[in-house]
Image (cartoon, rainbow over all chains, first blue to last red; front, side, top):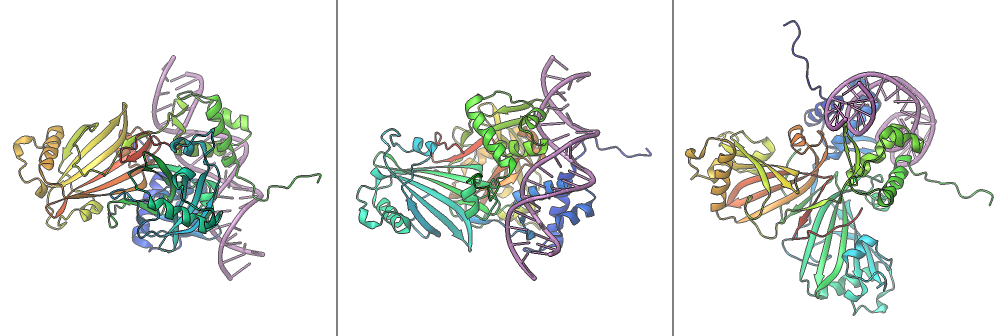
Length: 248
Length: 248
DNA sequence: CAGTGGTCTAGACCACGAA
DNA sequence: TCGTGGTCTAGACCACTGC
């Protein structure tokens, strides 16, 4: 009995580190406080920097930390709940939204989106491509692309501006005049494309929650929306569960 | 004009690798096919194994690859859509569910869950803790924990078995007898706890989508459910969007 | 047992932000 | 300019799977 039972299944170092640091965050640090830099933390725990980084990456993935190049690692505030409810079907842009930086072009949609829309890829029906940014509490939390086949908004006059923010608003206005017959939604994990990452102030490849919505009107898919939410800072809520919160 | 414009913002190697391999998956490989091992791939692309692994990790995160220790890296099938719709409020276990491996204990809930339930942490009201596994297409896609305060199911007789699967079914049966007044839902990114990871056939820390649901009845929170979905293989769908699919 | 992916090390250099 | 996190290397050993 001189030695106690050895761990038969040794826990990886980074996993243990994550636990230790996670507990320290709760007790020794407050939100926004800056941690020692990675080289010092690694030395303090007696591990290689790469191992320490593995632990920090996990904590960042869980929304506990925020790391910024050239600045440092800070304690993140609790994730903010952003409402994406489907309980009451509504066109995008309706209600008390906090969308900003509206823009509009006539670019052709990616093949995957064209498949969702009922557009004929051969006929090349024009598709309005809107780009919006969702800003909550002063932070950009989502980049959205809304694809609207020209056929869905026939009454749109060319006078409304050929492109840009004014055009985008005109498309949204026309869309809201239609009768929304239903909508569909899916959520999955993805990694940020370069352009979205830039607008969300993240590095390319950062984990994001991709929310894809189909809007039905007139017996067809009238619009498709692909919204990319920062996975580190956002908790998507449905049904007004704004205060719902589970610490991981 | 002897030299073309140098890349002013050189793309990281792993990012470029991810693109190259991702395209190769579309053209040169079919679902289920096994890739060359990491050491060979790294050599073939002329990078260190760690760099190659960074690219593979991203592709796995996006659900394009599946890696298993001791086996190899295979091309993953498209993510399966699992329905978690909130359009019609219903108690867990109702409808055509595919939940399995039901179990039930009387363990005290984590503090975060107790906060959501209206239980008095001091009085220590007993809480039924159910554990279930959601199996779709023969694969475990989610591990769920359902917390039901004893006060929510007062008519539960002790005769129904003190614990285990039979007890779990009894709790669910009693729950369904109540009038469900509403429900709440939130989705966020997390990393798999050790026990969940084991049941989902993943390593601890694997990315998961955590779905937290509150069930309201009798003017209080009658139950709280925390479901952990494999983020690599699942796409959460709302409103019957089973066929909704966007390639990333 | 051999071969796979998972963990870990001890360095190096780069890109970015702030002073 | 300096300090930060981000990328990258070339190794090593370990844990798991299947033969």
